Each structure stands twice: as C-alpha cells, then as structure tokens.
Length: 198
Image (cartoon, rainbow, N blue to C red; front, side, top):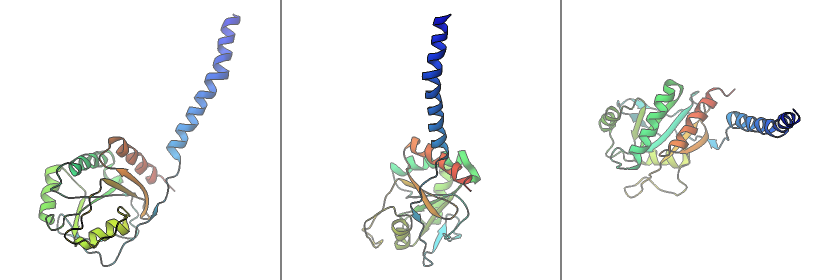
C-alpha cells in the first residue's frame, strides 16, 4: 500500500506539473498574437488585370485576410511546388482567405496564359499581371520581398518562394516558405488565427 501511495505522490508531484506546463505552452502557441511587420504600401499608379482580363486594384485595406505570392507560368521547379502548397491552402480554407498570385514575367504571362494556367492547375484565386515595373515595385516596396533596388527592366528579375500573409487592414503579418509543407501548415493555422482576431 505504501509503495502505491509513493507512486501516486510521484505522479502528482512530477508528472502533473509537466502536463500543465505542456498545456500552457500549447495554449501560448495557439493564441500568441502574430507580429506586425509593416503596412502594405500601395500606389495609385499600379494598374493590374487578372486572368479574366478584369481590372484589379490592390486596396490599402481589404477587410480580408490575404495571402500573396509571386510566380511565373513557365517556372519549371519552384513555382509548381509553391502552387501545390497554395492549392492546399485553397482546399483547407476556401472563402476564408483571399489569395493573389502576381506574375513576375508579364511579357509572357498575359491574361490568356494565366487563365490557361489556372484551369490546368485547378486554381480558383486571382492571378495578376500588369506593367513589369509596377509589379516589381509592388514586390519590393509593397510586400518588402526584395531589399535590392531595380527598375523592372529586361534584366531585372525577381523570383521568390515567399508567401506573404496580410490581415484585414493590409498589414504584413508573416512570411512563409511556399515550397515547405510545414511552413504552409503554419500559414493555414495563422490564417485561422487572424480570422478570429478582434
């Protein structure tokens, strides 16, 4: 009987506090507020169109959680992996999130090409094209993806696998490696968190 009591006491003293500590850590990971990196900077000179040739304006405040990415349709390796992960986000969240993918190769990726790409890959979010200099200025200055300067000219080429998470006030709340399943799992979790943020 004494031996049994010692085991019960040992469990209470050693194991229960550990379980409580693990529970608190899990709670903190679940509900800790996401950082605010910066406010998305937009420019009235940006003129974009989507894969249906409809005008697209990137609002200063969209009131929707948004995931933005940059890609190009002829990309052989990185972009297909990134799109596969974005399709997971689409399947997991549907209308809970607005998704935008901006081409970095607008000379090739006109609305017709983007529409074919969307159809081929089962993409139901907006694929955006427009003036190359505007697209690159948006990537650098708006989403802060690249620190180097450039003018969007023929030899100036951005290629990033980063997914950018924006809250409903168009504040950047996170960057995620778009080819990494674990990073995208975290993105999905953070989108749900932002959708319930006061």
